[in-house]
Image 1 (tube, one colour):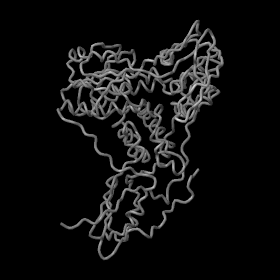
Image 2 (cartoon, helix red, strand yellow):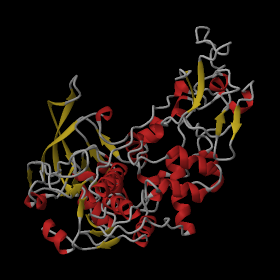
Image 3 (spheres, rainbow, N blue to C red):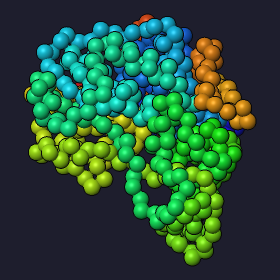
Image 4 (cartoon, rainbow, N blue to C red):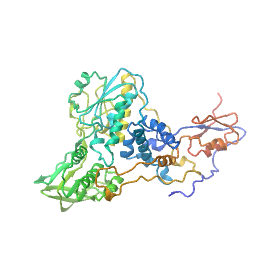
Length: 543
């Protein structure tokens, strides 16, 4: 449903004069930064691959997408899509379903057996990546694209890290994840499983590696002291999700309490329901407005019958009973005890209170600074205090998500590549951001977003994927909802509106150019451009 009834631009009678005997300003074509791309932690060219998808060229769209992110089928399912929160289309009706189109392209690539394009010529350099989670896989992929030989050492029996062991299969089916990882291996990345090294420098020297990227994630549950005596079964959420991912079905009992308010707590509670718990109750010390979990994660948990007891903290666990205290939120958003005590019964208690990195082995590497929470300090170039040893993903101080980790891997690869060449990599300065106010949309496609089909909550009894992907016509229609903010999509508005025939078409995909011998600077093209891919600048002074 449209949020604005009239998008006709108002005439500004105070604007600078246009055409006249002397041209005072001239139009120039520009590329601005779409807000979706600005918000993407992986730095994807979202507008670019959406444009190719809406043209029906799925393979070219997938190639453009995977130039930044090698795991689109995975990300289309598990990314929290901050790109959609930033999407200018929110001001009209609803954001473009970017994650749905990304998933479609990723699944299409799996179905069609698409491969990555050839890598650059071999550099002769070798890089060790420690950890085959999203950050390690991303870094290895991008380094391989740049021509380096990469070997990943993974402590676990399966590649994927927390993608495999921390995200339930009803959100991320293991077959699709395995296929995307296999494509990275086919690209030339060597993955060695069950290889946990405690001496990083010895491992580097033994393999004659020129640089190291450490991305071991944060797979340890954060420890918290809760008095417990003759307690019901108490386990941590990370261990529960890991057990289930390996095919085990732990018996939790009829009533399960999950302590925590993050996304992992929501996953643990939904998993408990699938394991047979008739009641899964999340206990969290803050209110919903202050929970760390994404709102849609809580909504999905509630839809599946999970209950949430806000403003409550556990004081003691004894036998099959928990002593809890009611909390209140102070003006600064911090929970404060009220002294109100009650008792809850439980057959099992699952602690989901955050995760730490198992990075103690790095304390033996001179120059590497390990923080008390296990995170490792890195510089702007992603390098630790030890020359040639880089780190990223959940093990460095930063927000944590799959897409952030993948972005870290890509950025680290560029810095490692530069370091191997005795150079420095500088992030290119982004162009100005294209805001909704810059757009001129008297004509646009009035189309509601595609709705992904889901298994009804009452029927979600196992770990089958709950959401189906888009069909090809749906994916194309969704991609066509993109407003192409700040980037020319060759709509011909400028070409058709120019009264002086001063715009020259250069052919499909090559856009236009101005014939300034004819241009009067009237700015009609600027006013007609729907995506603000034209700017008016002062007429250059002849020198």
